[in-house]
Length: 192
Image 1 (tube, one colour):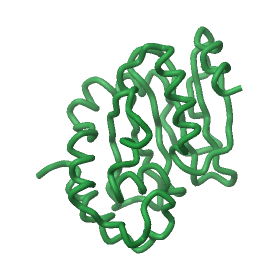
Image 2: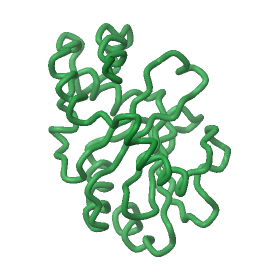
Image 3: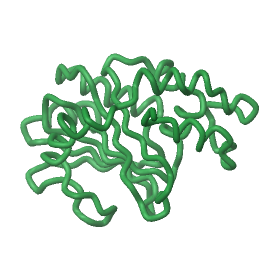
């Protein structure tokens, strides 16, 4: 079984599909576009466990949702208004920082929450130079991943100690960018 098959079926006929500003309700459900997108950008479990999970553990503490501490104590933080994984503007800000840090890829790992039990969790890997148009090209999969205001995500790269926690279901939705002090000039340049 392909790891993302449940995503294709679960979200295809999603009863709350009218939340999206990226995909109109009438265009929702193009399984061919969604499948091509997941084939390109899905992060396989074995690669996640072998390569990305150890990096995740160096950046984030075990995430039990806010107000619990998310980052290790030696990280500096920038807190921003959130509400979804990415808007075009904040994606381009993070992308500029990642390019300056010479990252090649970034991953998006969905944080499991009490009400998401039974729902398929996202685990994605994207090239840093991906365009916004390509990032939103997965029809309903892109819409759920990028816009669903209830989901929470960890975003991080491979070369440096930085990450983004998208706390979309908190009282006041937040994006928390965390980074080691030596990376402060880069992140404060783009997120000041």
